[in-house]
Length: 298
Image 1 (tube, rainbow, N blue to C red):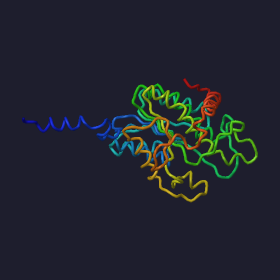
Image 2 (spheres, one colour):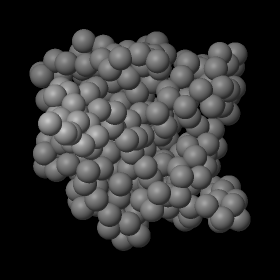
Image 3 (cartoon, rainbow, N blue to C red):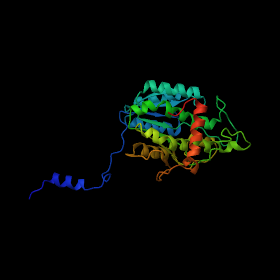
Image 4 (cartoon, rainbow, N blue to C red):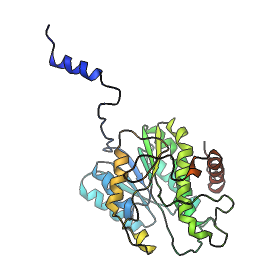
């Protein structure tokens, strides 16, 4: 009895368990990617990396000068493309306006990277234009607005992804003092905002997955040598490239566990803090977020 080589290979492959064959990494060539906070630090290097793969990158920041400089650099490279949309995330109205502008430019959005953030290490409480604690507003509430207002564009491009750049430095959310008005509470502001990101991710992921949108959160790298880290006076421990490698690795991963939190080099976890897995805490955060932003979860 004679067997063809192709027939033998086909038979052998059919006996392998499902998933045994390596899957191809996700390519962003010809796709549209929004990276918030992309005029400096990790965000800027991510924008460059996605453009180098052939993506159209929507660059975001407050400085039109720095944003246009990055767009010009990407254009001159001859690979990928870019455009700049300004947005001040210390104002919820400005975030809503920014999301509307992105939606008009990109009715189909393949990847949203919520990377924009601020951090303070002096124990002083700062507030946004709306009177919210500033780190909670910029690091968390802005992302809440974007995932909801850009959900139609992400759904239109499905399968699509949302990556929320969180942190391993977490502090449980004190729902009795989210705005850090108690004496000494300001010190936990950054950690609380990052815990909120991971909790939101865990809570919203199932509904977004039903629309073909996979949402995860991650800790990119510990104390990268960014302007933000240098600004708070703590010596860097890792490089921006370490963070880029982690984020890009997950962005390209063939499959992701929706709602998971990823530490660098580690397996996905439910969240970085048990509070994020608590249905009551999730429900409180979702209700509070809708109230503070004027954008409700669907």
